Length: 122
Image (tube, rainbow, N blue to C red):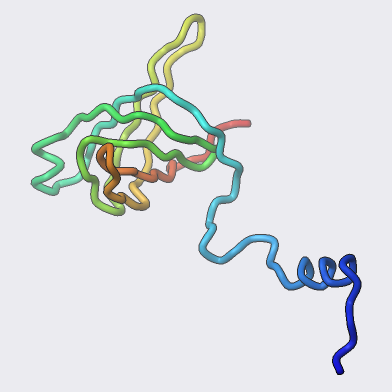
């Protein structure tokens, strides 16, 4: 008969087997839920990008290294984009460049993940 572990011993054993970061989670910074609309300019030479070179997206979450948003138009993986965050009150606007990591169809359009070319300052 195998030895019986107490609840604490079993939890410790389970915790030791779990990696701190899974291989499929490539984020290096925390994401924060945000809302609002930003403008995305597409810089790809794809015909679809020429049809919709500028689009408005609804932010979902954002971190130092990237963001997720819902778009009305699909974007291709690795597509180069520029994101324009409008000025708000006394704060200046912000322009960032990035690449589309993935684009998944959803009920409200397409959920687009974008990795920024440079990380935001903390």
